[in-house]
Length: 314
Ligand SMILES: O=P(O)(O)OC[C@H]1O[C@@H](O)[C@H](O)[C@@H](O)[C@@H]1O
Image 1 (cartoon, protein in one colour):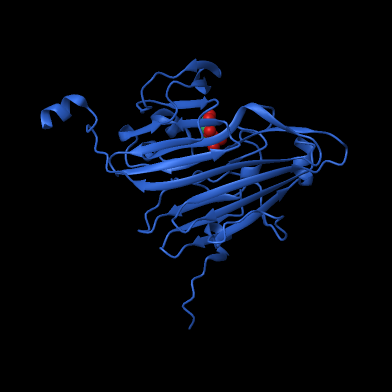
Image 2: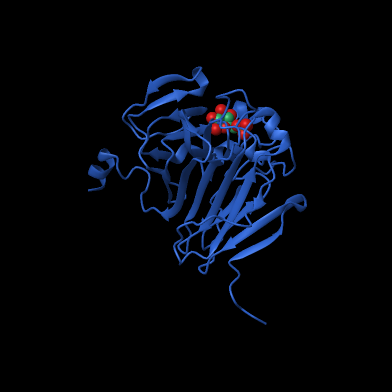
């Protein structure tokens, strides 16, 4: 029997839906459902799940899968006339039979190319032709990279405009022990206050109630620190100026049928996005947006940076 490593495996997931499993030599893995073109699992070399998927997630169209990394396209949230977060997350994607040339890092063997094109159904609500190519790569060190390339293939000469997000659900030990760094002092649009614009205070962001904010023009690197689990997620992005931060907290959690009442304690969405300034493509033009995730052990212990404690300990 061959013991050769299988980097890419096509198989069936929940409810017989097609999925692709990516594996790397050190034991890390990722799973991508063709339904939604959605990453639903990302595990480190110890087999620990790094993404949150609700125990109540419904793996059945037309509902989008609650967790992992849904793709919001061609509309983020309710910023337009389409259904919430657009139709990409509840469309059936295909394996791209002919991925167009793509600069690859030759050490990456675990990747899959998916494609979504206009369907007769979608054309009724969004009258455009497009090709959306998504490459999901699991790097040798366990990093998870998503690259989207969206091309306008309209034959009527018309441009189209869209907003976009990688709606990433991170798994965290306890939301009240989590902080986000890289967004302090930035402007944000608050979805809980009619998308009004505010400026974040100077401290790193922590959580004690519902949050639904779109930080605009953010740096390319954001860190999510999970003190209890001593893990830091690093999100790097390119072509996606904004970052959405969302936690539904208790009341909204109870109102969502595909989300457990207490699950808000164990998840946080930080989403590389392009919302404030929508993207317009003319026929033949292509846009790229990339998100790269890594999970690193952090030695930081809660309170360590509290000067009072440092003094006492000394
Ligand atoms: O329930 P949905 O459609 O998956 O959306 C979840 C949340 O997604 C976030 O990205 C939005 O900012 C929130 O407003 C929204 O509630």
